[in-house]
Length: 185
Image (cartoon, rainbow, N blue to C red; front, side, top):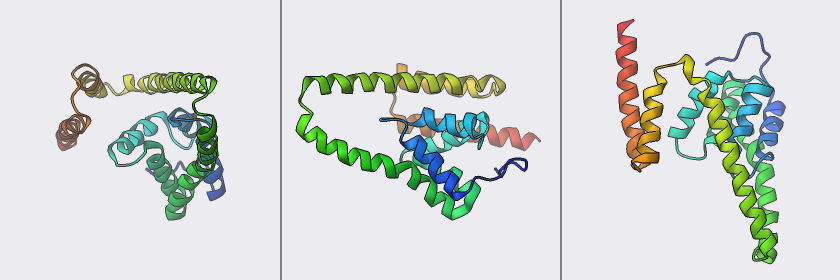
């Protein structure tokens, strides 16, 4: 998808610092912050584009947010953007994690530290649910997504089917539906 003709493309510096702010915003999951940056704050993507690109990123190997940074960087600044955006996303957190790992070696068994880590896990779950809610609000415009959503949630959460099988099934069914739909036009 080409960048909008009305919005100026973000520079390499803007991509680096934008994704740095995402990477430094959370621990254990920054996807809600990425959505906020890309869709709401900077408007580098629409909500529908974010959902579509995130779906692709979830299917690719590697962390979803890193894949998303590569896609957004490539979209606006080509190969250099595809390198700079994930670098911005990862540089700060890697440095912080190295420092925290050193501190955890010394203080990790201390009960207040354990309580802190449990609280952070709960916050991460809350952020994930909030982002899922926001993403779900974009689905009513595309009613064709509902059967896939119900299938995926049922297969994973209720039936406990393995993720690769669910993804392969979803890929085959959605590809067939897209081929059938596009073939009719």
